[in-house]
Length: 159
Image (cartoon, rainbow, N blue to C red; front, side, top):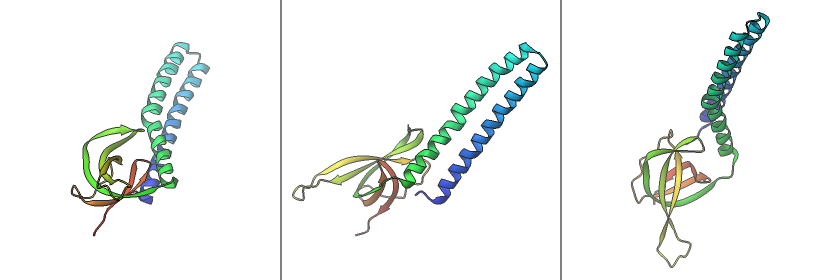
């Protein structure tokens, strides 16, 4: 599901946003310095206030989420993964936020460890909402590769 292209795209977008945010800060600082030299204190104070508000808004809503998503993808890329064979039950229709990533729920059935019992426990995984989920019917056996509860790959097992 995740390719090298995804990692490169996210790193590039993060770098672009940090550079643009830094340029915005430099513009407001330059304007404040100019107004200080020109001794126009009222406009200097207005520029300082407006600059702080705008820069904080851009940083909080445009830059930090990309930094966190890039960090998450790095952990996903190099972190410990596990594979689980299970039975697909349901893909959630609603999306929700999980660690600043929009995700969908995936419910699977996992056979109990006791071979004498024919009991399935349900396990909840999450899937990045931007990723395409393959067409899998309910009750189909699948192999899920995950990082924690986050699905990194899913494939249908053919018998």
